[in-house]
Image (spheres, rainbow, N blue to C red):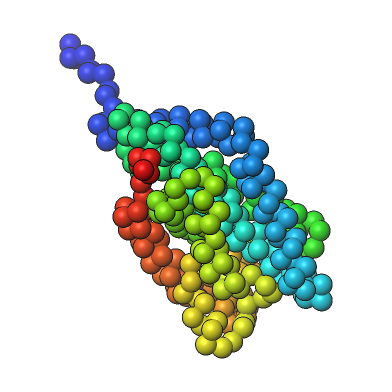
Length: 277
């Protein structure tokens, strides 16, 4: 007679990962409910980026451009504005509001870790951003021209990497914001410095020392990766085959990674978990 087989048990590591996902999902559901109830935040998340894209499209003067270039430029503008307003601005406001209401302080007394709390608060904004990119791609395909998909991997890296960077930047900036209202001022310097150098007006290919410096600003590598991923166009304006887009992505990926590391350090240094006195 064979001995009875012992029931399979879940590995401690798998159980811990499952518990982390459960806690993040529960907090994310609560944040989504609060986002839907906050009309101002909901407007910033859903409508403001689309309005801003329309403005940037008119300013960029894309009417005479190649249809594929025009479509990619509109999509790039949408990604950039979503990262700055849906992710960065809204998350800065969210973290400040939760801190001043002592929500962050109470959560730290439970099972949730700090990364889990930050991730849960950021998840609704990240999902809205991804949804807007998908809808934006469909819209420009119908209204302008299908922009194509030269390298989907680089598009995903650019959007997801940019979302992570600006979510962390929002957490760091919240430490300088005393109230929710003050986030309009504390986030303004980042927007004013980052947006003009992002290169969202027209196709790549600008030359000059200023644009070379701009390649090392936080949002510019995201824009370059979107252009490479969608149209296969590099920073010099050249259309590259699939294999060569990976080599052209080395610099923007490196710059994006470097800024992300700095954002992590900034979050650890400036993020506040208790109300400011």
